[in-house]
Image 1: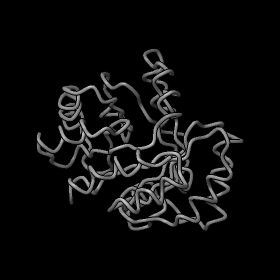
Image 2 (image 1 turned 90 degrees about the horizontal axis):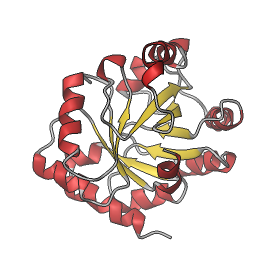
Image 3 (image 1 turned 30 degrees about the horizontal axis):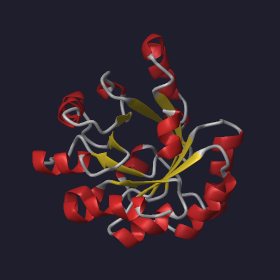
Image 4 (image 1 turned 45 degrees about the vertical axis):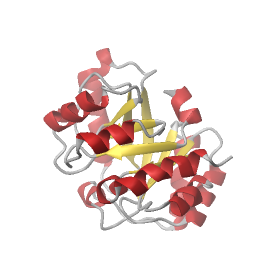
Amino acid sequence: MNELLTNCRHLFKLDPAKDISDEDLDAICQSGTDAVIVGGTDGVTLDGVLDLLSRIRRHTVPCILEISNMASITPGFDYYLIPMVMNSTEKKWMMDIQHEAIKEYRDSMNWDEIAVEGYCILNEHAKAFEQTNCELPGDDDVVAYAYMAEQIFHLPVFYMEYSGTYGDPELVKDVKEQLHQTKLIYGGGIENNSQAREMKEQADTIVVGNLIYSDINKALKTVQAVTDMN
């Protein structure tokens, strides 16, 4: 997992609750992206996760499950991401759910395949923001969360999630300046090559998700836009 995080520049994120044709999914898996994440907020079921997993497994691209609920956890993925929602107002989303998962799955967990994400949700209209009872942080708060992720919790990943809205590149830059070991992932609202490059200039890794379902051709082009950068 550490090797993937170190070298990862681009990720596609597929939602188990959304339909995608075999043709589009094959194009995603063959695009040259560094890995495909399976994850979402609403309607994530084990059946939906397993369906995507079986289809992605026809290809060699690494496959990651971002865990959103315990009912959809399954073996078979290359890697697993465990979010800790740092700007949630409820301890449940920072520690309690993770605690329950550890109790149930501890004996089968391979930590070479697992990374915990410091998750900061920055779109107050996003379903994930509402579901996890988040509070919208100011810029200084976001920078402080990033500092905590690295210096207090020693997390390998800090994820700035704008969830369908394009974020602030200057804030992403400020966050990146706080991080030396922890990798910064940006996700949200990327709709074209220019935005993909702009956010990749600041973050270690960008995630493209909603664009897959609205304009598959533009989504595919973001891979080359990022890999062409130095």
